[in-house]
Image (tube, rainbow, N blue to C red; front, side):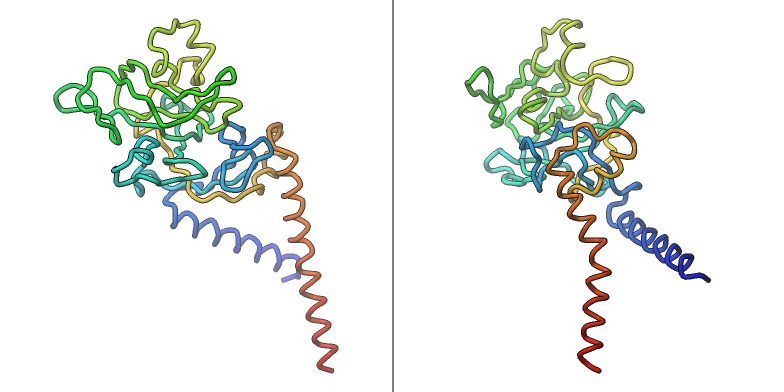
Length: 272
């Protein structure tokens, strides 16, 4: 076997072991997703700890974890009070819009409507139990025309059990719930089609059913996914800061073997 063939075989084996280990750990395959949009950014140039374009995110199988919503994590006295994921309260989920086949969304779970056996709706993390419609003000500060207000769910009648979701980015979709009917129940069809999220058929996104959730965002690996976006031509939202950080990582990877060889040669010369 030539040196090149041996190196290629070693590299393939290493990647296989790495992916296999992540598959076992997360219960999902693929165990990683590359973030394409800036909808979860907390700062303009991105930040480690938040989910930015070009980041790799480990995806946990939703059957292995209990999803904690924003309202559960911000409600004093709740067993999950204080829980944070990716820089804010509550979990971030990956879901298929209306169960469709287009690119999944990675957004934060705000609250969940759960059917009560008596026919109404419960919202875990709030005092709302067996209500006909859901009205609730979240401890989620939003900015509007120079002022601030807390995000409010207004007279929402869920079409079925499911989660309300939103991105974290305050400059784009932060404070704009993906399921627009939850904050504007009287909105016209024309208005709905200009706001909120839509599926591949142009229909407004509904509350996220459990079966539409493909994963829960776990640990973040910053920057490395930007290379994949560059190859696929979908890197328009990757920040300059991410490109610089990726460049430094690549440079370090390339330089490390040479540094190790230099250190080895130096130690050999000193021992002679």
